Length: 138
Length: 116
Image (cartoon, rainbow over all chains, first blue to last red; front, side):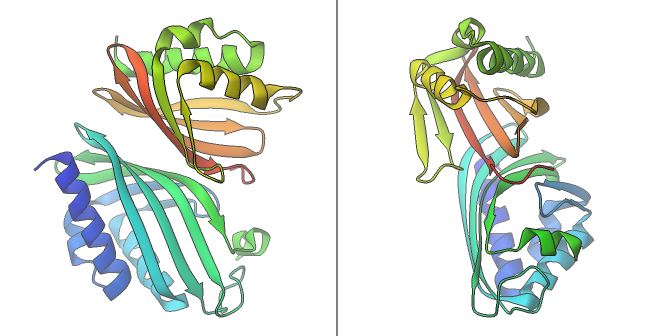
């Protein structure tokens, strides 16, 4: 499988997880000890189970989840993707905007694979809609 | 030269350019037609060519005191490498692509207001 084909499978697995709460496909693509190095305010996500719980938790506090992934480049075991998302807050999380208001994310991901699974990823980007001072204290 | 060694040279070249206004090293490492995809700017901006990149650094460094200036190699393989960039209050992820020993394309995104 080419690195681009793998990236396309990852996009479908992310959609399945975020839209339907089904993380089975994602589990097959991530190492159990995967590490996501996320820029502030997200921090580090260590392990597939933590990533899964984060996705499922976010599905509980936001709706109308829209994600747009764009494959940019890949070689060997590395690939980069652009990422944009938009969700509607339910207003129940400290630092989230009032119910009905949107949170957006525009960032860049770099993924590192090992033995056919994602073992490490880096993310940096801009989030709008959050009250960062409150969100970071929660 | 390994991709990590190349990336370390890029870091030195960027430091020279931003902090001393010396672009010789950067010129030697960039393809004349290098393209940088700068996603954190609104609107999305493409910087095309070494000369345009040089001007962009000159403009963004003018009158600026760098209280924080950290470039860190994250990973690399083949012709791809990634850097973490922290400048003053902002932090960014940069992915570079190398061709014939020069940077031919780069992607950058991040946040100019949140430093971690």
